[in-house]
Picture 1 (cartoon, one colour):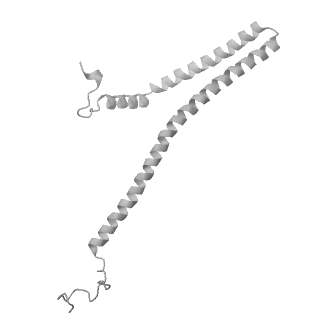
Picture 2 (cartoon, helix red, strand yellow):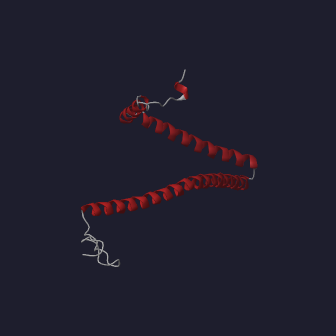
Picture 3 (cartoon, rainbow, N blue to C red):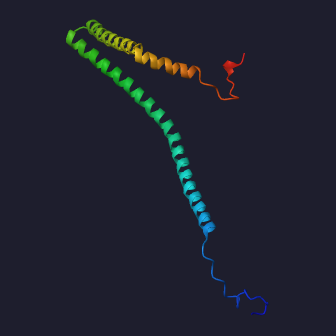
Length: 154
């Protein structure tokens, strides 16, 4: 027994009792901290990826605009080159422009026929049924409560 009168007290201040063996509650606590650390890291990674994706959307729009401008410029250049080559071949700008207009008219007719064919595919029975089912689902989908749109207010 020491001078404090307690039997369980350490004999000297330097001596500490040995740590108790970890129990079930300690294991569960460590597991919870590990999950919190893991999912915290995952959440940080997700936040960083969403930030990059948000920035990428702007860059994608800029790249798409630049590609469209470049494609229009290339198309006009090729059209001008074709007109010049036709003018050299026919020996007349009037005939070259008439031939170029005919080529453009054929491309336009082809695009219109393709569009009409695609619209015909939309009227096929299976497609029509799928289209009607999709429109029915969209029209009869319940709005979330408390969601009032401006066009719904009289």
